[in-house]
Image (cartoon, rainbow, N blue to C red; front, side):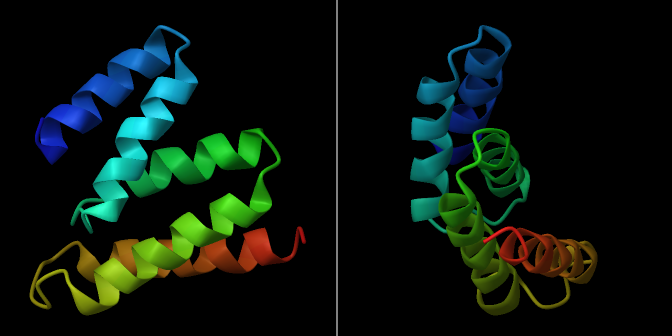
Length: 96
């Protein structure tokens, strides 16, 4: 299963209430340094809802790494997404 398929299947699992299965797929995508925001956003939201701030911070730090160091520098959505991840990380750290 490729990254896009895992994201689509994760969305489907979430709609069915199978959050643990969705987490597993999204985690595989971030392991692969997926260059889109979806798995990072969804995991951060899921972990926040579950009051799992440590994992939320881990995911946001990974997103920042990917968008700073891996995503093509000229990509038009890179900086806005990077900025949003940084703000969310600062907010999450306040919850520790």
